[in-house]
Length: 404
Image (cartoon, rainbow, N blue to C red; front, side, top):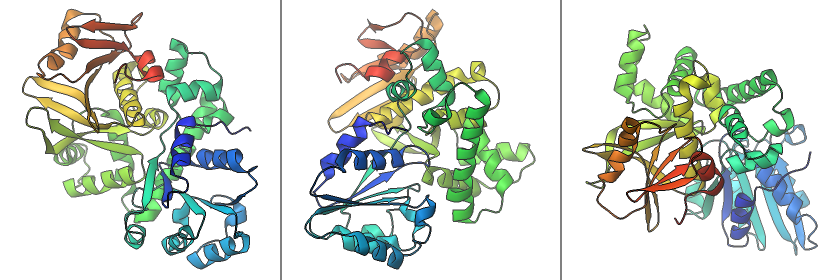
């Protein structure tokens, strides 16, 4: 099957070539890191001065590369002095002490190393120490709505948007197809189980697997709601599961390390400070979230829309926090260097009470940063109300934020 270029990531990777940094593509399993590597090969393989060494640890052909010595021997046999050598390693964390090997190779003249990993602590230990931070991380997200349309050859429509919100953006669904709910469900289940087994249970030697599964289901059902470890521990106790708040924090950290979940802190808009307790949880992929949630889309559409908006803001490069005001909550405080944007996420705004709930907190923020309400209100395109832009969900997912 043809490898489609994800131009956003292709441009980022290419921009770092030749700048003396290890390029690390990070993200959950099956999120598309391998696609980005294979696309890199496809785009550069015909260049006469280039030599590409590609190692995919999930393929049988590379099963004997288990240690740094194995890795060194493999690369040494294929390295060509005088050419621009690209060393690409997919799921590098499967190789013991890979850090020492790639630190040696990336320092060779005219050599670039691009690696992928499915654990956020992949670059937090020895590697970071060995190269004094000379690596760049590129977070690979699931397909955006626009990419989803391209991958599945779908028109931009409300029906396509609902398919995206239901099935999520894992690139592997392109091969599975979207015609069979059973096959999509089977694929998502396989991906979820692999992440849980390889990146959490085996990596951290988890014993309390029932609670591990119950907690991730809880986070699916409470997507976008403020939670704390203490409140979750109390809830679990009411369900006859006696666990501590520390265990909740530990397991929550494991989900985040595997890029299943993002933990979003609260931010005092007026006081300009982070609160240390209570946060919101959002999922990396909508399909995996829906897989573990109770009920159908009609019962949790608001949560899915909020999660979709959060994910697209992250794709756009924003740091995102939950805004706190004396008068209420602002769903997202989004920042880039020199930019701040406030956003409320909503399903449908048809009644005045809903409008006041969504627009009210934004109206009470006394600064000049852009403010948006994003909703799936039918027939809405873009409308300004008291300096606040009411933006259609589909338009936002296709075009981002206007004039920002």
